[in-house]
Image (tube, rainbow, N blue to C red):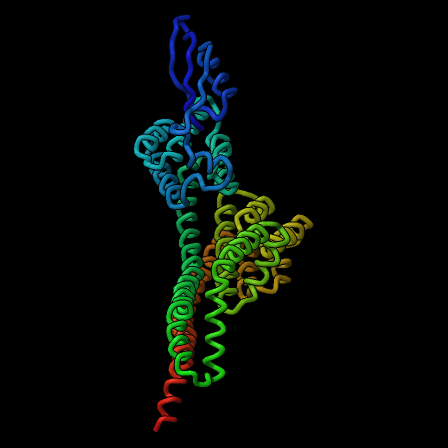
Length: 406
């Protein structure tokens, strides 16, 4: 979306000029005609007027707005509707107070659509940043006359979901950063420090021990091939990132990650917490179990779990209870499956799913804490051992020389 300048005749037939926001010249002409303007000349936006951030959003290369901003928007809208403020007035207040430019424009578009007679759910479905879960719940809230209640549930759901994601992200990020810094330190030693020792050892003419020669050979290799290896690693990383975005690549990678020690437990329980909380929110909002499972499939970010959810949904369509297909899923705990069975029998499945999601969230928190406690000393020991090996390898000939001199 960018500003297109125009020159032409206004509604009164007088010469006029101005600007209109549109994605293309064709759309700009259509919008102007809708306003009664007859454009004679439309100028494309200059490079300085081009909104690169919005272009990234339109192309799907960047999110429209963060989950935190969406959560705040949802909660604020819920509070105003609950207070009896009309939807259009609520949108106007949110538009004036919103600081994110993309979300601000989105609110304006939603308000325009609602003003033209569309429902809030229809307006949201046309905008980027509102997923299937969000739109379906708003639709259910409008149909039942409980939009404020649904929006409040959505706000809580987004908050819990964001908490789980941040826990998983921190679990993955910390070891990566420490390993990256450690690798940089080792590379610096091998490229800048070891060659100094090598020059000193060469001047003595003495025989070098095998461990010293090994370190020197590695150092020489890194000096000669680092500049070649770096772009190769970047290309390989980009190719791998592209591969795991493909359906088969994502499935294989997700299955591998689920089987890794500690990390696998965090990924599984994090996704199951998201699944059970989403399913509970949908069921308590009046969405059918079959439709809720379909929406959950879009929300879960794991290829293996997505495939299993497809099979579970098929079984439910065939008339089976939720516990029957869930019992065949190897990573789904038996105790949790029994809790769901009780929920189905008592008619309180949505409430039982909330309790289950709380349990999964607590377990994710514990796993992240334990992993951090375990991996921190492990990384220190490994990096310390590598640095110690390099130092011993460099000083060993000196010690041997001193010992021989005596």
